[in-house]
Image (cartoon, rainbow over all chains, first blue to last red; front, side, top):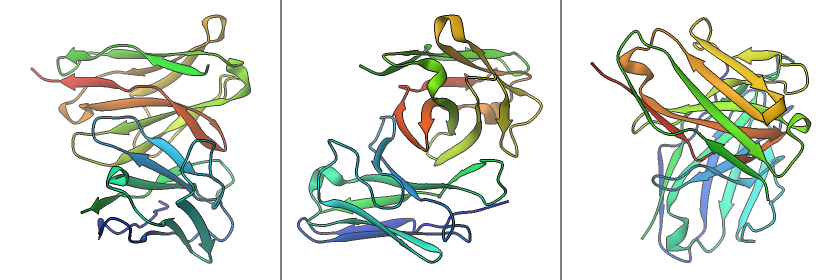
Length: 109
Length: 116
């Protein structure tokens, strides 16, 4: 079955740039989406269609995709950005089957 | 405003069944697909599948066939997840999420605990 691979953890100091990657064979043809999940809360969409930011999401969140890798970048990470981040995409079967990456714990301290 | 409100926590014994509801408001229910996502304790998000809110046609992810059933009642803008023959490993938070490409709104999650 299709898989998306993320690093388990990323750690930065406040104000630094955090980059979280997501690799998958179908990403050249399928969009990547990114979700932030804080402890005990439902996930929140932070990036859709590789690089678009929903209203209300701070500008420091950006996304990009090249080849088989999508990247979430948090420029000037804040303490409140500490959370789990999940990428999501669909496989190339044409049957609209989704998959989440394993998640990346972002620590900002 | 858009809201997805899920039913409350459930404590069930192994072998029992559970039905989780997800009531939508603030938008046209049939304009968005509804997806279901599982999160076991301390684990990541797992895509369970989705249901076409126009046709009622469900699609299940691998590992969620047989005991898992998605259904709708469009008259009350509500999606349902039913799990039968519950096992301890079904203990998790279950989320509904509306989709139009992205999952832009999520329910608050329903904790299902399976324990004897």
